[in-house]
Image (cartoon, rainbow, N blue to C red):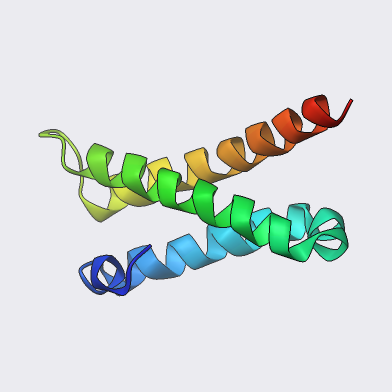
Length: 93
Protein backbone atom coordinates (compact mmCIF):
# COMPACT_ATOMS: atom_id res chain seq x y z
CA UNK A 1 0.00 0.00 0.00
CA UNK A 2 1.37 3.42 -0.87
CA UNK A 3 2.39 5.90 1.80
CA UNK A 4 -0.16 8.37 0.43
CA UNK A 5 -2.96 5.86 0.90
CA UNK A 6 -1.78 5.02 4.42
CA UNK A 7 -1.58 8.69 5.39
CA UNK A 8 -5.22 9.17 4.35
CA UNK A 9 -6.35 6.45 6.78
CA UNK A 10 -6.96 6.83 10.48
CA UNK A 11 -4.33 5.63 12.93
CA UNK A 12 -6.78 3.02 14.20
CA UNK A 13 -7.21 1.50 10.75
CA UNK A 14 -3.46 1.43 10.17
CA UNK A 15 -2.90 -0.21 13.57
CA UNK A 16 -5.58 -2.80 12.82
CA UNK A 17 -3.97 -3.57 9.46
CA UNK A 18 -0.62 -4.07 11.19
CA UNK A 19 -2.15 -6.40 13.78
CA UNK A 20 -3.91 -8.49 11.14
CA UNK A 21 -0.78 -8.64 9.02
CA UNK A 22 1.32 -9.71 11.98
CA UNK A 23 -1.16 -12.47 12.85
CA UNK A 24 -1.16 -13.79 9.28
CA UNK A 25 2.64 -13.73 9.16
CA UNK A 26 2.81 -15.56 12.49
CA UNK A 27 0.50 -18.27 11.13
CA UNK A 28 2.87 -18.86 8.21
CA UNK A 29 6.19 -18.20 9.93
CA UNK A 30 7.69 -21.56 8.95
CA UNK A 31 7.10 -20.93 5.26
CA UNK A 32 8.28 -17.35 5.60
CA UNK A 33 11.53 -18.57 7.15
CA UNK A 34 12.08 -21.10 4.34
CA UNK A 35 11.43 -18.76 1.39
CA UNK A 36 11.40 -15.17 2.68
CA UNK A 37 11.61 -13.27 -0.63
CA UNK A 38 8.86 -15.34 -2.17
CA UNK A 39 6.68 -15.10 0.94
CA UNK A 40 7.01 -11.32 1.21
CA UNK A 41 6.14 -10.94 -2.46
CA UNK A 42 3.03 -13.09 -2.03
CA UNK A 43 2.09 -11.32 1.19
CA UNK A 44 2.43 -7.86 -0.38
CA UNK A 45 0.18 -8.85 -3.28
CA UNK A 46 -2.44 -10.26 -0.91
CA UNK A 47 -2.19 -7.25 1.38
CA UNK A 48 -2.72 -4.83 -1.51
CA UNK A 49 -5.74 -6.75 -2.77
CA UNK A 50 -7.26 -6.95 0.73
CA UNK A 51 -6.76 -3.19 1.16
CA UNK A 52 -8.41 -2.46 -2.21
CA UNK A 53 -11.41 -4.64 -1.34
CA UNK A 54 -11.69 -3.08 2.12
CA UNK A 55 -11.47 0.44 0.72
CA UNK A 56 -14.23 -0.32 -1.77
CA UNK A 57 -16.43 -1.71 1.01
CA UNK A 58 -15.73 1.31 3.23
CA UNK A 59 -17.02 3.65 0.50
CA UNK A 60 -20.41 2.00 0.11
CA UNK A 61 -23.41 4.08 1.25
CA UNK A 62 -24.23 1.92 4.29
CA UNK A 63 -20.67 1.40 5.48
CA UNK A 64 -19.24 2.65 8.72
CA UNK A 65 -15.99 3.97 7.24
CA UNK A 66 -12.95 2.72 9.15
CA UNK A 67 -14.94 0.04 10.98
CA UNK A 68 -16.03 -1.48 7.67
CA UNK A 69 -12.52 -1.17 6.28
CA UNK A 70 -11.02 -2.99 9.28
CA UNK A 71 -13.68 -5.71 9.25
CA UNK A 72 -13.29 -6.46 5.55
CA UNK A 73 -9.50 -6.29 5.67
CA UNK A 74 -9.32 -8.60 8.70
CA UNK A 75 -11.59 -11.12 7.00
CA UNK A 76 -10.01 -10.90 3.55
CA UNK A 77 -6.24 -10.91 4.14
CA UNK A 78 -6.05 -14.33 5.83
CA UNK A 79 -8.30 -15.84 3.15
CA UNK A 80 -6.21 -14.42 0.31
CA UNK A 81 -2.93 -15.65 1.80
CA UNK A 82 -4.42 -19.09 2.46
CA UNK A 83 -5.70 -19.36 -1.12
CA UNK A 84 -2.38 -18.21 -2.57
CA UNK A 85 -0.45 -20.73 -0.49
CA UNK A 86 -2.87 -23.48 -1.43
CA UNK A 87 -2.56 -22.63 -5.13
CA UNK A 88 1.23 -22.76 -4.78
CA UNK A 89 1.08 -26.18 -3.14
CA UNK A 90 -1.20 -27.52 -5.89
CA UNK A 91 1.13 -26.16 -8.57
CA UNK A 92 4.12 -27.87 -6.96
CA UNK A 93 2.40 -31.27 -6.90
